[in-house]
Length: 608
Image 1: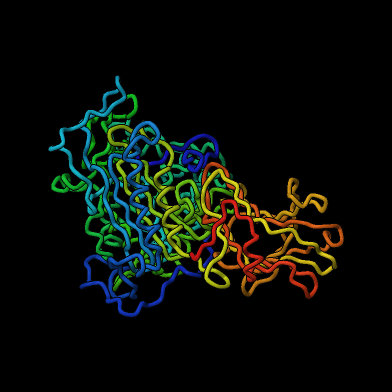
Image 2: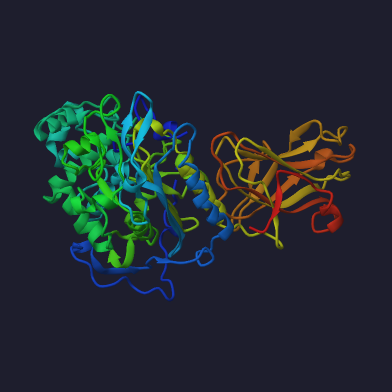
């Protein structure tokens, strides 16, 4: 299967794994001094080929060159290796390739485990039938993987190219260009609704049960939406199969040819294609021992052919699944999109078209943020890389790609998690672990001086940063500090609290309202004394009115950071804490004697 599990009325993919990119901004990266253009002109580019703009190209380099913290980046491989063992019962994957970078630098590219480890799956013992060591194939950095649903990104890019050319309209009805699709009451479904999974179609159909292509297409033509188009989000393979058929109808070319002519050829992605030849097989990661009841088809060990049953029935070329690729090629694609559509001397999209990939079209469905083809702001696999400006996708075979234009970082994790059987893996723990680590490797510099207080990034924890007791006496009493936060929205929060005046030991705490002001922006009030979600990766000036505590005895103030047991953001930072009373400083962290009296539980001074 080329999809993450989905189904049911309005169920989004995140429910099985454990949002908004502003226009413009960091999407378009300017010329980088010292970076040469990519090689000779590449074939088959058509109007999106070489000579229509230039963009930076990738090179291997150190963490320091990428602007990443080496200690944290080095631990990313350890995080990936953990899931070669029980996680929690069986290995999450037999092997994996992880690639991480920032800017034009690939700072980490490593392989762990095996591309081929098992000959079969024994359902009676729930164990894999292991090959003898000499017949196993270790994972390599250039191992090719069945990308499963990452295929949807390529199909979507091809559609956006047609939108850019004026050959399709985003709000155009699909049936106007592909009349057969209008059967079953689908005449009102638009191109946008297919790209954003708001068509109302069910998640999946067993098209492979029909022995002929005509029969499979008839099933799709006759399929009726289970919900009115535009009324809910439901992730569906059918949306991208329909887009494939639309692409082929409009262009007169098959999807595999379009992929080569308009994306992989111009970008030099030499190990990315549908239906890889038999000669590639020794360098392809094996997938599943596919047999009923867990598989819809009885195929034995699937290795070098597409895993998804429906894509297999379509000859390995389908809009929802079927593309094979390696980590470096996907990094080239990531760099291309972060460059605004250009890589070296090739351009596959204009910058304004790239913005459509990263713009949330699903604002009516919070939690299911989606650009044209790309998912946005999904902590369930992006981990702490998830921001309103983060985009990516996953594949059922164990693959994922995450782009964060805010930090110009990108992450590829390719694992063969259905080898030897799909029932061994669940959730997205490895994806989250490596994404958390890459997010932590992007430094956050203190607002003042060398260090700031950092909350950490642990889940299911409460960290407190408590100031010594002070005695405000005037109506001008206030707390001031610099604040930086990025948390899982709605579940993880940073709260300012004060003790009751008659409880200076802090056994009872109550929220203290405060305001924040970002650089160049206006004030935002936080009457509940808490912030949660995304703050823009900038330091905010924070101020709290403490006049309610004036004249009533000693009071203690603290910042409390609380996370739930699932996902986390990049955490919270507090810097230059001061409690002022008129012109007097009751507490100033810049004074060593005051700083020594801060009680930090879970918070640490951090230079990054």
